[in-house]
Image (cartoon, rainbow, N blue to C red; front, side, top):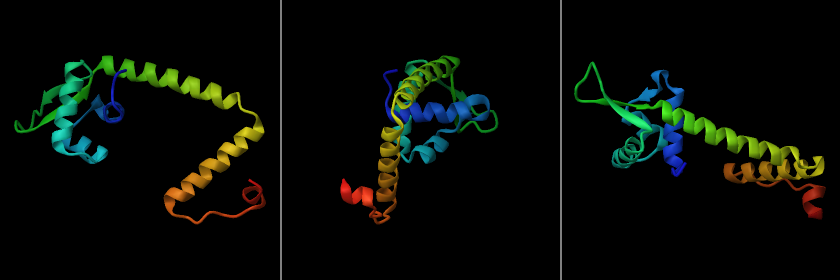
Length: 126
């Protein structure tokens, strides 16, 4: 798709909204970036036909941005393909390998949350 992570997240956010639109300030809050960054990102998305800027009918000082049908199709196609590939990887794993992955992810989640690791026989043997 030739998009950065924030561009994809912004499009997914817009596609989940009624009318597939939102104010730029909502994207600033959602993504945790500056309004200058949003403006630059929206310029790129508009240039590639993924969003359109619309005047706010009740306030001429503000705008809405709306994801285009092209963006909707592109995001669905890309994420659908990616999800299919991810599913194939998961299904192809042995039950033992799946258990190891689940344990790894649990430990990583605990680490991010600042939880001390749980010492078990399995972690001592490792």
